[in-house]
Figure 1 (cartoon, rainbow, N blue to C red):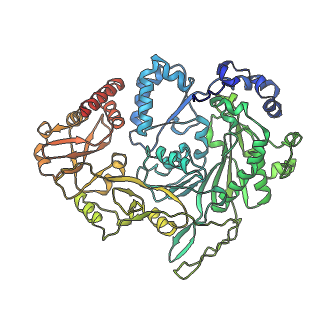
Figure 2: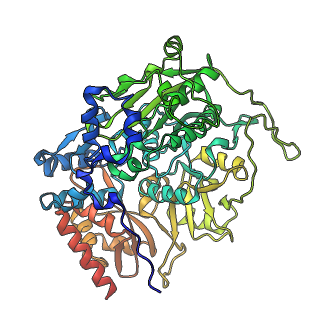
Figure 3: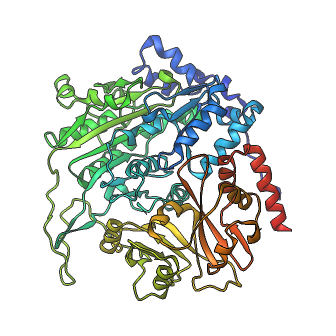
Length: 610
């Protein structure tokens, strides 16, 4: 029997740009007329009919960011009238293009730019992210020694920013980020996105943020509860600030959705504040314009913890951004004909609005600067809000007393464990690569049957965190993939592991062997060929001195810092161990046109199949 075809909805028959929003959802209009000043109402409704512009930023972890900034300006940005710089973004390394993703893709004049942007995004040097979504991590004032919790992290654009700020010095920091999401599928999306960053300072956990487990840390001779230096609380919301990229949000908008979410959002925020250390900062944000999900949540917490939590002004960090201060009244929402099962949403008095400094919150409407809608509040913890047993000593015979309001029930098993000095793989790797300044517990395997096909690298503080909390929290991913089992079957070598390109910059400071310096012309030969006879390489005699297996090729390109690329040498051949995305990136780096580089990689792929 032929499956029944779904009938197209009224919205699907409409052109997005010509949709009559006034006819679609009167409940939305009647609600937001209370928030938008009358003279701006038409402009507000008109901007919702226009698809969201494309925005992107340069990844600050990438050491060739200066080159990409220069390349973009010389080759593309200076010749594009539709693009504008986001003046409030640090270093002015973020832009907004007044074309939708679809328009950009189909515009033949910008084909080179689109291909370059797509490849560099996949490579990890550029992040395509909605402009207002970039704001929350910018106001947290992150230092390399901070331990940070991202409570609702997926899909990961803000998590990437947190990692960039943490690794801003160019070296592996002491701190790390714990990125959490309660949905396992969304956690997998987060892990896939973070592969572009591949930072050794990231844990991904799968827990309900409302009852995130109390974790432990080592402090001198005692074990204490871990409290985070910074917390990002970008909570699930109705998303009515994203109408420009998802018209269904508008057509299905109901006040009941925001009302129901208010209580979950408050629980997440409260748990985030419990996990925040005294003197730490928490950012609360949503992509909603509804005060029930925004100021009402902040007001509820500030009223409950008056004198403990403070709402901070952060406007000086965002010079050039147009926004409104937090509002002080939403009683009009309580007048809606709706069954308030959990009570009315309380509004502050005029005195409370000033006392709690709700004016320090910022709300962004789409018509201000051609963006989506957004809300941000920065909270500072002045005093402890939950009495914790900070001095408890953990021993095999001691049961940990959980004094927190919300308790964690362990119901999952993690398979992450560090390599041991007695493992043959540890001796194999340290001898082959001449590894230094690293301990065996910095290398992690994650396998139910203890197979060591993939090895991950984590910093010292993460190693301590893992040993104390492996059975207290569901860990989906940790650290950066640094070694993979070699796929070469006839390899005559003492080490069957290969270096992974994504972690090459983290790995180089740890090794003293297997680094081969090439001239720029030799590097180009390796780039444009899949396999290269070592007779074509000037350092052929040097390569004969190397045992077969994984190596690191280094060269200087365009007067940049040294570039490192994962490679392999056999008996007679040498090759780069990189994918086509990496190959295109490096070809453009040495002067190739992006379309030519893509064609070259496509031909190499055909040759390899043959």
